[in-house]
Length: 134
Image 1 (cartoon, helix red, strand yellow):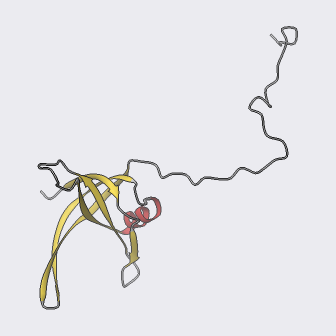
Image 2 (cartoon, helix red, strand yellow; image 1 turned 180 degrees about the vertical axis):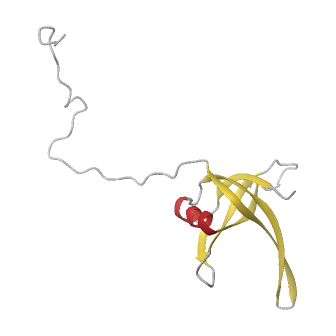
């Protein structure tokens, strides 16, 4: 069985493109996954390349950004290509599902300035016991 479960943070925003025929979206990103240190001086994370296709790729490109915590379910795919007469091997995770584990920070919106500063109790009305309706 070739199934992978990963949880980590994006190292940068996903790169989303369309296939040559324009019908299929492809998103690529790198996931930083914490690892258990076996010896001192060892890196504290693995940087794992993830690839998404179709609607999943479009949603990842739209909603996921650098630093966001996500969980990925997928499979390992090993490939190779030739560059300058040398064979290069690749290992990617092909995502079947991506779960958003942390919220994207909401953009800060400026409040319109008013002539008078708004008091926290400005909308509260004080009633005496004689004015209480019950």
